[in-house]
Length: 246
Image (cartoon, rainbow, N blue to C red):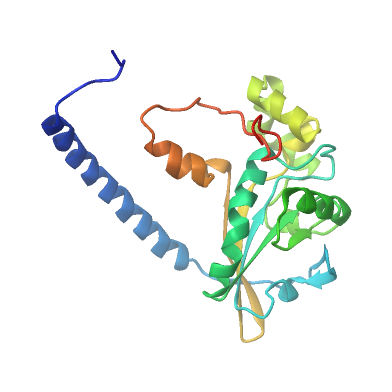
């Protein structure tokens, strides 16, 4: 017998209708959050940023590729990562890659940022088979100005990071090996979405969200949430070419 509750079709239907009410409330909260997100004030970008890209140096404005909106995801891949980018961020990158075409129809350009030097980003992009522009923020103020990474001093002042370093859980020890960086360096990168708008010759910062529990990959947030059995609380995530059946 299964460990889960077993019932009749009528009992299932009644329970499903109750769940539908909760799902509708959740959808309404999501709609209201989207409205609030777009009501945030736009802040003009006053500093000139120049990034390394596969096609040479580019300014923030040039990353828009002529469109009025720029959406970026900061992949955890710091200069200290000797093996590669964060596997979780990498999996999200795999899912972001096919969205560039549809997003362009909405006047949105999608890019990804990381602090590692461009040569390593280019090699990693080729390994993963990505097509999105992968932009290096190495040796710029951009990650510090927009909270995409912490300086060593900021990390030392972060009680959350210091608590993790004092007694790191097993999954973080494994993650440290996967990226090839000490935790004190690896945890300084912030997985984040960041958005900009370009209007009448001015670029505006409009939105940033940090921390992995604010956004997760499709397989975990949509697919696994609908399976009958829960997965592990902290599942092991691999890069797509590292799974046993890859």
